[in-house]
Image (tube, rainbow, N blue to C red):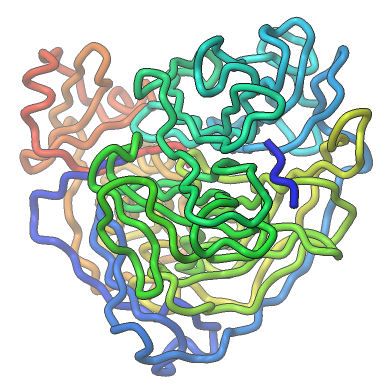
Length: 509
């Protein structure tokens, strides 16, 4: 709603791999000391700063932009009697662009904001709902709930095969103090409310500035082993005079019912519940964000007079490691960044070490009763070398493979190297097999080796996985086992869960 004035849990049982790297460096500057915040990378865990706050601070580094692009027409709209379309959440998921956004359709009850969805093979459309219509309503108000009339501002991620949708809910047209709810799904279309249908984040009511919108406009991503939730709260301590500002909470629990940390002046601090505020990371409404592995930074997108501005933050929000990047063009409300299912930036398959493809969707005009005309804008970002140092390369090349020194293939998965004997198997598991080896990974120890005929197991509802060195490495591609000359042995769910887990070998990216 508009604000006016695990989990990929890679349970690593081996010794943790600790690496430090410079989070902001160009090709010529990568070896220079103090060129950005230093980060410690631990497979399957949330990255953490190696330096203390304030140590090694440098001026933001410039990035270059090129290959600007935009659609020449509307790419998606609710169709029928929809008076507006805005606040999109966009995922590149299984080769499809899937978009959820706020609209209002007469066929969806009760009357009020609805969340609709549509899909396409290209960002320039045409987008269509699963039912073949312009858009399919998939989530609406629930009578008697905090979201009795309006459900809007969806933000969707997929973790461990589950879709999580955070959204703004309101009980009526003039309700004060909106709140944030959570729903889950197995397919992104049929959703169930969690937390007994109660909000997971309510208006803090710390301040009174005349803007009673409350808490809403959530944006979620998953990093390491935690959900990071950015949101508006016009009543929170630290919000601007007009209520603008984006607060951040994080937790391993998607419901944020336990283990909650709030971003404060000195970084994340443990707090008793989701009512804690105190610091915002951008002075804006209706923002979106993502984690950019190749830059080792958060990118926060919000609208300015000239288009969508992306501001970059280091892992602990101590510094801005890069200058902002502008995606120019007309806008009315938005934006919705095109992201991976986990809320990370899309990786360039052509140049994962030096190019960041940046695409988004935003409303571009005022419709009959609100923002409308969803269009695609984008550009590429360069001026960095993510593969110059070991830690940066392990982040940027997650899911890629490359030749090994032993005439096999090394697959980069969640900060580890898995050596795969058969190239055909590696090609099936990897985003892409690079033509040559990346030198910065030469000294990284191989965590596991997948040999032909390796033991494989399968369990109903769990999937299929290879057992390598007593660890279970799950994969989704149905024909991978056969390509590796492995015959999966059926096991019970209990036996499956008893294995120590390695990272998924082919998580969707």
